[in-house]
Structure formats: structure tokens, C-alpha cells
Length: 343
Figure: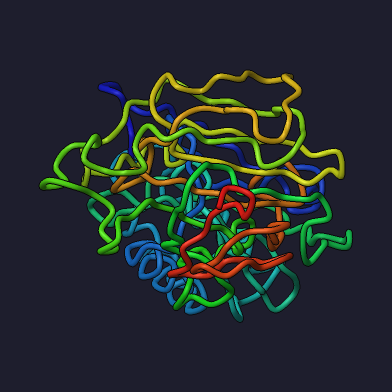
């Protein structure tokens, strides 16, 4: 939990169950600073939600309350927690199954199948493995058809040859595969002939070949979000408080959204509302946010809202892959890639 040197603000919001389509069902909500970029499910969240399900299905609501942090218990006494959970169970029954979908402001989001319907349960766990945030809201499935691939022609967002560290459709190839909105994402680094990403001892960002390299717009579009000012990390020490770091969200003419993250601090050269051309410099590669070394995170999604988005598989128009020119290709882990015209 982030407090920025002060106590977190807590608000109790309890709504009747017949208003579920209009309001969020909330036990308590802990305001946390910073924006969280969905990543793989943490072991702490996984265990906490497993225990929550076990106690909930056994109607051991006192055991759930026992998982709360002291601040959470102060915010919501046992009587209110007990009443809420009884109402939830009366309306929806036991939990049958669940799937981790994303992170949102330090909350792990689980799409949860009850006996009588589906809900999203959001749970935040502190460093002591105690629950300090928990709320429930309706699950609204995506009804529109999501493209399986991009319709906008895409070019590589950099000059020179880079290496795909994560990329592909399986968890073995791509750690992003299990998260809905970034399931087809790439993490891309620069490496030398020995496949090392840094020179010297790798203790400074300047040791990394990717650091300070220009990041280019992969297509024409409009800047929807541009975040700058987040400091670069010391290599090996990530910043989980603002996971994307300095980042850009770009909307294409075909209403596809391109997300680029981990720019160098104060290097972004565009702002919200700017119209950009393919090949235009957006900023410099950095090591900001939840990043252990300088690299570029790149993915496409179908809408601008990260929590409602579905990832779109990205195919680049014409690139050289491991020395061979490929048309309409989506790179995978280990590929060394460069825009074909740069050879």
C-alpha cells in the first residue's frame, strides 16, 4: 500500500443488491496513489483470494474478517462485513470458479463465477499479506467483436536491430499472455552480438544499449494519453507504484489503441491531442515504472480503458527477422528484428 507519508483515505460504500447494475457493491475501498498497470498475478494475491473463496463458501465470515488489516477493520467493523457477506451469499450463492484478469490501482481483479451469476471481485493485499481493500462490482462481458489482429499497418517503433525478450501467444514465450488487455504485448530490448543487453557491469542505465534510443510512432494517430516525469529506476530495482512509468497511448484511424511504456524521464515529445505521423519521434527508451532494465513495452488493444480492453495481436508490415525478410509478421521471444528498409 502507498500512503505517501500519510494515512490512506477510506470510504465505506454499501449498496443494496438490487442496484447492482447501477452501482459498485463495496465492502470498503482504500484510496491508493498511483496507477497500476496490469501484470501477472502475484503469489500473495493468489493465496489471499484462494483463502477468501474457501472461507466464503464455508460461511466463515469471521475468518475473512481476520484477514483484514487493522485499518480495514477500523473502517468496517465485523458487523457490517458480516452483513455484507451474508447478503452477497444470499443473492449469488457460493463461488464456483474465478480467473485473475488484471491489476487496477493495487487491486487484483478476479472475474468470479458464483452459483447465480458473475461478478468482479477486487482485492488489495498489503506487505503483511493482509487485506486492505475489497470491493465487488458487476461483470459486464465484452459484447463487441474484437479483432484478432491489427487492421492499421504497423512499423517497428524504433531504428536499428532490437531483440524480443517477451513475445508470442503462450506463457512460455510471453509473460503477458495471461492478462486480457496486454495478452499480445512485446517487451523489447537491444542486445549486442553476444546477446547481452548491456556493456560494462550493467549497474547504470547508461550501460544498457536500449537506454536513450529514440522511440518512434509505429503509425499515424492521435495521442490519447502522454505521461512523463516518472524517474528512471536503478537497474534491477523496479518501481511498482506507477507500473507503466512514462507512457503513451496512441489512437489509430481504425480505432485501435497502441500502448508504449517505460520511456526515459522527461523525454516524451508529444502531448494529449497531438496528431502524429508514422516514424515521428515520441520520446526515448527508458527504465521507468515496473521495469528492471531499460526496454520498451509495446502492445495494441481494442479500447482506451485498460480494464475493459482486450489485446489485439500485432503484425508488422515488413521487417527483417533474424536476417530474413518477413511480411505481415508478429515476432516471438528471441527474434532479432529490424525494419526491413533499414538494411
